[in-house]
Image 1 (cartoon, rainbow, N blue to C red):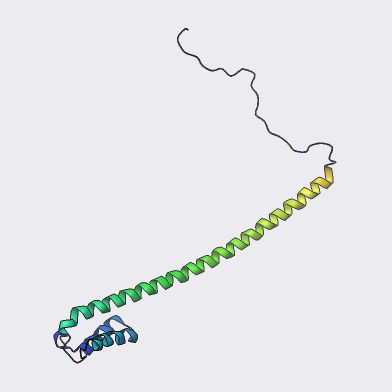
Image 2: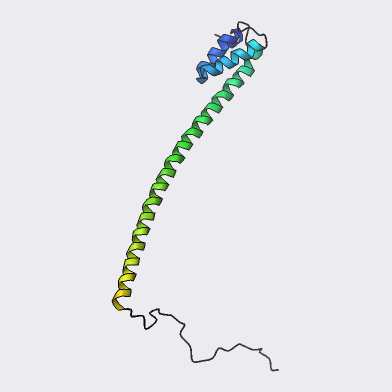
Length: 140
């Protein structure tokens, strides 16, 4: 059937079928026409481009919204994974910390009588020749 001979109601149903528009949107479109005093049994030709655009936009918005929901679900899954990994690494770090504390306590008990400083220092090797600053090439 040619679009030029469809009623507004038929055109709404045709566009809804092509875009899988939800029933709530169809009701909104119908109510818009009714609120303006336009019968749904009238020819849709004067309103065809506006109807097509409305259904196209609704479809685009719905698709974008679904994509956003999918992306949010993926993000939540990733955040849960990151949280699990963080907790696991934190527990490993705590285990390392406890092991180091036990080792330090054992070393203190085994050999340090407190009479000398057990810390070690690393210093730069000293050279015998003095450091010279180059002077001007000309005689002064």
